[in-house]
Image 1 (tube, helix red, strand yellow):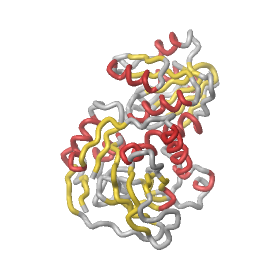
Image 2 (cartoon, rainbow, N blue to C red):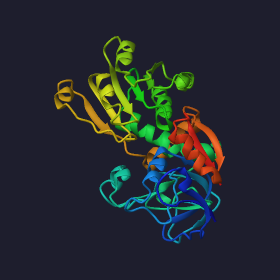
Image 3 (cartoon, rainbow, N blue to C red):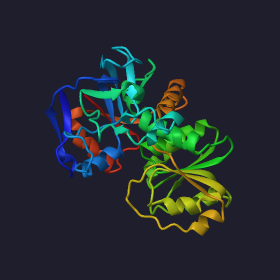
Image 4 (cartoon, rainbow, N blue to C red):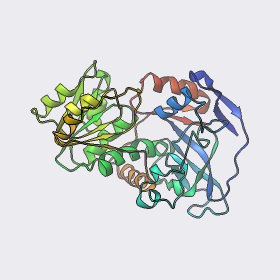
Length: 342
């Protein structure tokens, strides 16, 4: 089969199209014929440090997979050949630890992440255990389905499950890449007042169309003052921060007393010096939302099927242009997702 291999770490040019053996499913594995695979910033970070310990060899990136069931391992039970499916971000979880049994399989100690510990979806075929796949509704096309888990599902986790957004609350979304733009839609669908913070004036129209009631645009990234002006000085009830250390203190300054901060990822590597007094005196909570459980993926697919959320596929590119897709994501040149199609 054709696959894009990360030959070492470094610039996008290390991504090379190669012929490698088509995998054979064992146990509960499902062989998925990949029809679409999203390009996530995590893919970029993995490529930049592809020689990290624990990475699969050869390293095939991509954890946002949608396609058709091509073959089943002898113990796979949930699907039949020909079923339309999409993946969580993982190839497998153990299924029996405390985390797996309490809808927190994203924290399973024995999980294998697609596109890192296990070969991912930058290929014509990929292996995924049956408990990390969900059926794709007929009305959802493969490029949209591919990005549901990582963008819509993780945003659902952050806004609904971890953040517990309630109708009438004010929610701040920070970072308008794939995660942030979908979190805006979900927060809007939940009946909250949505404030989106971005450095890019060119994204304002798309964010308002996605459901943002207020868009705070600041070239220097200092958005807290604008957020407070938009809330008559009170601040927001909840914030979803998809950037991390570089924006954390602006998020903290944007919070109302008793507010909830949900951290979803760290993309800059910026360390944070935390003033504990500034947290406890105002009753703030800091939480984290880690990827997507299968249940959350299934809920996200329902929201997409109903039209409440529209997966933002900005560009569809052939698999052999994976390096160019990485350049676009690395340069923050897209609001929605880039999707590779074998």
